[in-house]
Length: 146
Image 1: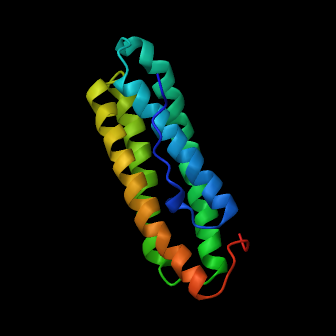
Image 2: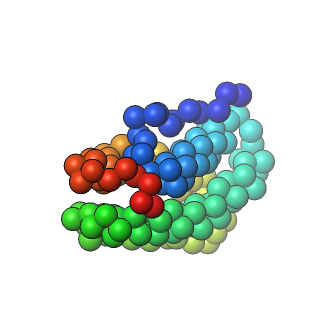
Image 3: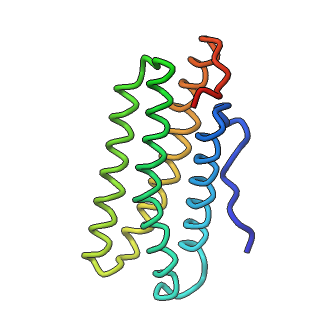
């Protein structure tokens, strides 16, 4: 099965570390959605979904920290607002993860999570994060300050 390609080059911010992390997030979410949509029995999907959840719990926090560090370095004026969005997403990932474990791997919950993750990635990276890039460009920063 072909992997779902969600990443588009127009999402690049020109900050190497953050772009690399975004690509990895898109790749992981793509393979997560692929597993969710596959014809395999739910029991067979669970280990792969568990892996993705563990990855997301760790990586989302790491990535947000890197992005927030960069915003502070360039004195990004939208930092506080952006951080609130990040904190909300970290909380959501942790809550879903907890619900999923308590519900004994509920399929509907994972389908919802997949949809929300995809919408969030595209809205956040394609919209919110682009504002950081535009601000950096206006300030004449090359993107290698990260």
